[in-house]
Length: 130
Image (cartoon, rainbow, N blue to C red; front, top):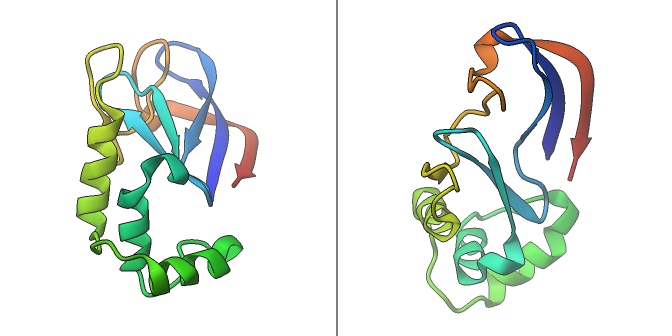
């Protein structure tokens, strides 16, 4: 489950919302240079996501447990480790328009000054999403 949280940047005063974490049916990555987000549905990832789910030994998400159990029983392709899955998704994401790369480990950044969470104050606005 992902979340969207409102912040105010103490460095530049900008107010913005940060999305973090994917959902039951998609992954979310940040650009390692500018912090932009890139979201992709698991169906679009095809064999990469299926191979990752196959090797989990448990559901990817309880909301899709029945579907994940079917993948684990029936998917004929190879199992992917988390590292292999992340590498495949990051390769698929390609480059950001700023020239950076979309990564699972990249932090969110202020859209104005590119600072990170250490320089932000939460505004109290938060929502959780699939």
